Length: 330
Figure 1: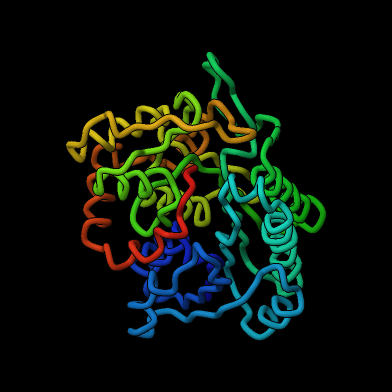
Figure 2: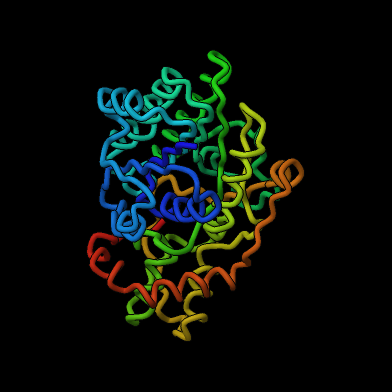
């Protein structure tokens, strides 16, 4: 099978490339990535050196490029990880998110349809559902109405609707997965876990937005990769699957956990002004993927942090040069 993995030099995409190659070594894998600031070719360079995958640099928002690329390659499976993902950046430069997340997704759908791709899978996010708010005991289900707030979430929701429209209108074989916050190896150090890890190891203040009580559901990236694979192999066409670990924690709890794990004083926490459109609580209900596909997360939070921090400790040459550009958290 010939597989296109877009955004395969980014955080989750990189982890999935390694997962897929390990599980299906007979597949031909092509990675397409624009290599923006968060994409790093070094992530997959060992696989390129061994000729286990191919890499193409390109922009999914460029229709003329995508049209020719798909016509030349003839893929069986397309998995779209390519996206602008940082909420703060979407507030400052929303047009970039519209171009990549909406126009880019539509280009992939159009090319997949024109070239009769056997399966298209869209990687989405829990943020498309909006904010559960303070005091809520509800969870996001696949039938929860989309109600995004920041431009990033709105662009991903629009992309999901486009994917669904291609299923309804053209009977195109598609699936969508929406996942909670991921953490693990290769994550660009602007995100909360790797960013705070780096600051804590240098005894620098950890900037916590607002009161720090915003809640997210956390999932180790390896568990996410396994869920994606199950959806692609066994999921029903035209369906959305939520992926979450029932591992809700406030940003304050995450910060304290990191400091305690590294044996650093809690006094390193520093409260800063909250960001705009900062949703209060996300929480995913994964019942559908558990019941239909038998998926369960295998890595608990303590284990995941240990694996993550061990990777960052052993790969300082990878992330330290990038940290100068990583001055915001999510």
